[in-house]
Length: 526
Image (tube, rainbow, N blue to C red; front, side, top):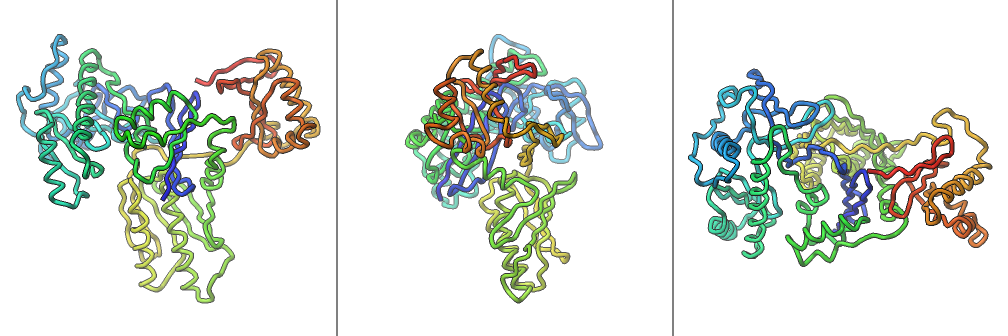
């Protein structure tokens, strides 16, 4: 299986697309220049409310909504951690060593949060679930620093090895190795990818993780609550860290700064594969070049087709996400049971694909085509379980109910991906009436003249593919050639634009806009 990562960097956000055998599997978006309260971020917060009925507290970490911290997320060594932080912020001249802090009693599973926290207390917390809809972030007081091979947990002082490593000899080797190289006072979870890794590579990563913790502590000592203490690695780096495998053939990036960042990270964790990172310098938008835009437009609508003419109808409600399976007008077999089974098996593949693509979480209810045969129902259930094994999110799949419904729960830590697949006419702005389309190219040329007067030559004009095909018609006598030689304007095809929509960019990718009075203003997207 061939895997590729396509990274589209703009001044406002970084969009990351993961493809498997050229099929779009995941889309992630990360805003730039703002605190997104991403999973893994560490904050120095202040307790605002204690809710005994929920056995939880609400903590101010800087988000408009107070963050949620349940008692079970305090961690067993919460009291020891609090004592360390108290000592750290009370004496800003030195940083205490973890293993020299007197160990405090562990927090039991049956305790009450009111026994450990009160309103006004300061606390070190980490985001485990990003803000979704009207809810603020979800927190944990058990801090962890995640790497590719290890997860470093301060104050635990034990070594745990992934249960997915089946060979006992390898488990023993890794446990003994980590015990010998880790500092006192730190716990380490050995991840599955550490299997058969060399000592030098593992030791190097552990040092990096410990340095990140020390940087976090040094920052905490200088800050007052409420403050961001440590920011998780960018989502691009996080995806690479979690899914990098021998199947990865290339990582395409259209920004030199992010390109260097990814290369440096790969040089650290896997120097042998850093050559797969490639800098994209084409004028066509990178998502258009690799067919990402088209796949998002066709695959993220309310209705999604699959093989043999079947289709899914997907709806989100406040309580759950519903998926309805339909065979359409197609009938592949005379026997209804066989026909339903065939379409349901085809639908299963697309459903699993959609769950990953949209990053759907919570409760998912699937209404498959009715089947009476118990063997067919069991086969469909086994098929769904097999397909879901490749999903990195925690999930649980239940057999078909007596009503023919399948229920799935899937972990949701980030807002689901939403892409608007409809377009408002940029010419009439939804009013339904436009000027004669015959005059469109004349209007564009007038805009080009105004842009050239303000910014000179070298401007990039983005057009819808249909319009681009029209202005390209005729080669040397085309409008594209005329505008290039007369005004120095480069025309570029862009699948994200409406039919009669135009956008102007400078050489650095900053958007150039015209006001209603045809006065030009440059608006750098930041």
